[in-house]
Image (cartoon, rainbow, N blue to C red; front, side, top):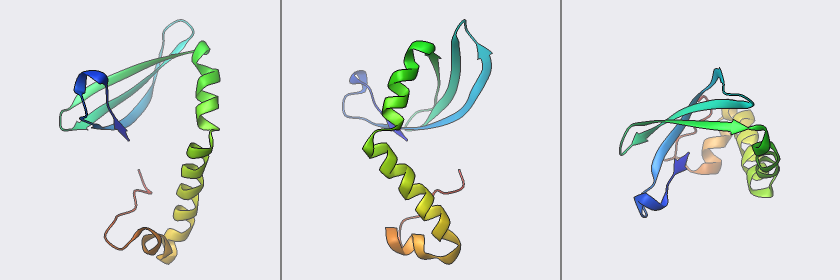
Length: 97
């Protein structure tokens, strides 16, 4: 995943979710991740009950559903070698993250 912020200008950072922390803060869950390039930062997100509607709306949006469908198609085709041909021979498939 790539993330950015206004403070970084046009620079984008590679970001990976690491875990959903067992820690709860009131009615919130804590998600933990880190940026890996060009700098390493530990990032925590505190998700509250009030965030659930926007999370569901985002997950069910057409662009995200297309990504989910592509993920499952490529994962299903990977054992047969078709997925790499669909994306191009030079690009690797990140199916086992």
